[in-house]
Image (tube, rainbow, N blue to C red; front, side, top):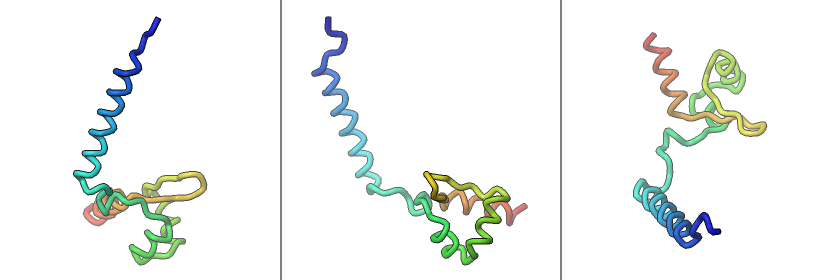
Amino acid sequence: MEIINHEVLSRCIRDAVRAELQEHFKTGGSPPQDERLLSKQELSEELGVSLVTLTDWMKKGLPFLRLHKRVYFKKSEVLAIMQQKTKG
């Protein structure tokens, strides 16, 4: 008894992948500049602060992502937090 028609499943997967690729290339194929993940070094250089200052800000709530042993930041999230802090 065949529960899944392999030909239909294969066609569905191809259609889904094709649609995703079309959307990917329609948007230029890369995330907006603000959505690029930055390393601690890159963000400290971009903001003009030391790594020590950046680490201190992380302890105080600066949003970051930890992938394995490395730390990354979404530039858009960092800028949004910084704008909130300057307004409030």
